[in-house]
Length: 154
Image 1 (cartoon, rainbow, N blue to C red):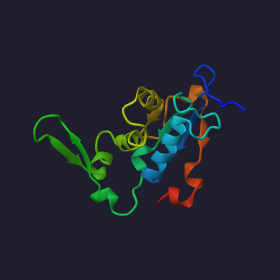
Image 2 (image 1 turned 135 degrees about the vertical axis):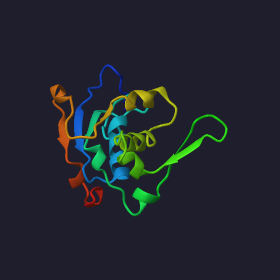
Image 3 (image 1 turned 45 degrees about the vertical axis):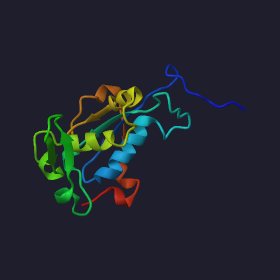
């Protein structure tokens, strides 16, 4: 018996759509990161991009559990002395780019600082509304909220 190793030319990438309305952010990000990496497939290979293209719609309607919507803090640094900045999920979701909450949550669940992770992240498309321009790819819709009762908050 030999160990199977997928080759990039042999991998067929599917397109999937996930509706994030009332979905819990952390659970959604973990599911999306798994699909982007390809860990749901039997031919998963750590050094090869075997994941799917993922389209997330209604990213502006995601939910947080507990008091994270108010109390959670996101930090970033400008690179200058004393340049630490902080913001909350409420400010981001009510701001100009609400889809960044989902994008950053998924990005933080991917492997760090690797060209493979960057190429896998390029297959993620997040939209704040319920429309997306990828109809020509005939994406398969996955009902994420029905997979587990904890995946959705009302």
